Length: 144
Image (cartoon, rainbow, N blue to C red):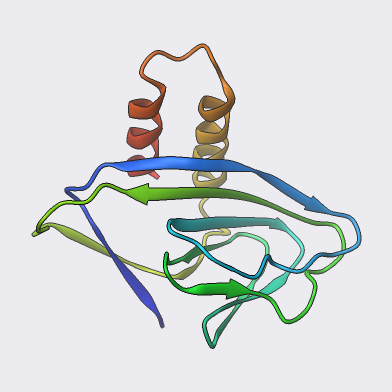
């Protein structure tokens, strides 16, 4: 199982987040991002590639794609696909001694808080009513 190691000392910044819905099915954008791409599948299935590795994402699964690697799909997702995504970056620091290692693909079907937490991040991201919005988003992402 592929894993990613994240620093516990770095501040994270949400750069984009939202919901995706496709009635007929779409391809995952073919791109190399400079930030992480965190995706929670609510409905449908999608085989998403990162470089040469294929991740089958089903309802309740969370996929974390790394910056600097090519992400794409060979086929369209299933019809009526719905997901939530968060793109985030990490600030640069010279060294990090406290780290967290997580699986790139995690089955979270028994953890309903994951979707709730991602929805909170999207709400804060699009709200103009929060003071210190960037700090709050960073804290919510750390909690997630």
